[in-house]
Length: 423
Image (cartoon, rainbow, N blue to C red):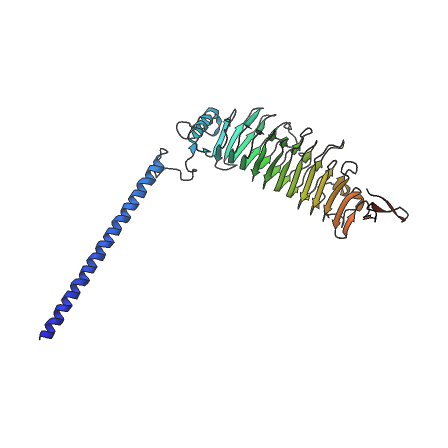
């Protein structure tokens, strides 16, 4: 009997302990729930403060806007973007507000007609909703966007449309490390219009380190005029420009790198895709496609002025009058380039090299779409050609004698072998 009472007391104590544990767990769950609700509440309040700081409620805020930007269409700027209203002052005020607070300027979708754009300071960032969604329209004959003596300006997701007969979209003078990403520059040029004096982009002075990435330059008289040392175009497209890129005579040391890009048009609308004049510097082309022009590429001038170095690697070239015309260059280098006939093109015009002003160079694995190999006579005597048949020196192989003098082996028209001093 006593044993039974003892067991009953132990069971009662154990039950009370279990009930206490349950109460503690329930209280703990309740506390954690309260903390969770509190955290959510704080987050909601913070979110509300963030969204309503732009004057919009959480339900009506445009969540696609870049964080912390100044919206050109918002109060008090009120840019219209309907292609009719003059948005010059509205954009100027919006940029002033952005610059004053160290924030980017954002232009929502629309067509903003202006007489000029603000003079952006160093490290300014201006964004649109997309190159074909946000367009700045300029109807004048001067320059829409002028950047001088600035560093690190960034323009992205924006279109610039110039309709004046001598207008220029972008001009950079003594600017460094500026970036244009997903920007479309366009004019009014086609085969039958008088817009050959329109210019898309000007890179002048000591402008250096500026990049154009995923950009389109369309329908300009001159797509890009280059006189600055070294900048780049990557993953970009030049379409239906009278001259796509022009390095003009007098541009001493001017250079450019072009990669993963394409140049397309038709010969009546485009005279030349790439024209390099004067004592230019280094030009580098990698994975670039050229087609649809009277001349795809003209390097140097027949008078003897040309770039210090011109290199093409993994490119495709075709032109109606000339594919690649090397008139003058000190150090030309061609590797893995495909030459093809353009519409109405001639086989002997795919590759021309002036022996007087481009006497030496290197050609590696060039592909001729008409015949198996370019004839050796295509290349001046100082060129070295690497192809399916091995290594050929266009002027004949050279050997060195025991006295250190170098001789070139020659073969006459009658098959007679001889040697001439090679230097």
